[in-house]
Length: 224
Length: 70
Image (cartoon, rainbow over all chains, first blue to last red; front, side, top):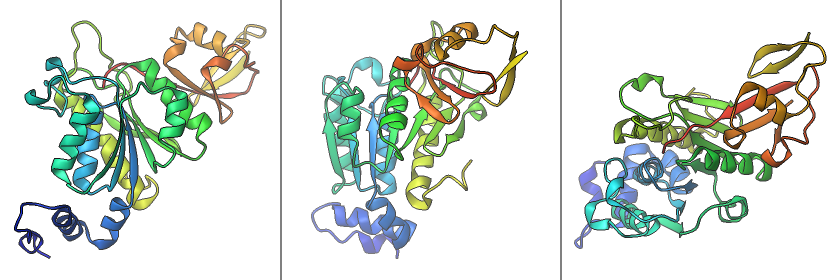
């Protein structure tokens, strides 16, 4: 099916048009798995804003997004927000952007600081959870919570993406059946070593790609 | 010598000097406890239980350390 045949709406691009484009690109069978999938994205910074957007572009039907922060000018160097969104809650700004990609995507947004209790209750429906925090103790907290308190739930985390260059050091590693980590595992932020959209984006897209593989194939057999 | 298998590699300790707990092991390794997910013989050990979780020779330990950035 060609794209032209999907763009039937007289009133701009609709959710049906988006579904038609995805099904045409991916095939009905794969699109059904993605559109029926639900992914939780914990944190909407440099990782989460990219992971959520690219999951939406791939056709994932439902996202549960959570963050407590607002969009600041200092975020624009690497996070998928725009200057006219400064001051908005990231949950609202991200939802706005996701609906601009797929008008029919279901977005459950939670403007909260996630702790173990919130993670267990808010992310219960998710097929996969994306850990997209920036602080290492928060990464620890969510990974521990999911592995210890949400048995069988899979989490795709990220660690080690500061700086620039050295793209190929960033890898996807299946630590166990339920824990996948993207990153170079060692390069953290420190004075003089900041975050760039490019390298954070590589890690975010490793995460996204692993999540898509989990949704489509059920495991990472082909990808690691 | 007593051995712990840490992240797939054997680490030897003089007999009697094996760390008593997950907490003590992380101190010996110089790792910030707040940034580590620990698994002992396939079981996730929650951070609150690091000091209560005794270790013995021959155990398999996975330590997953997180660094900042995102």
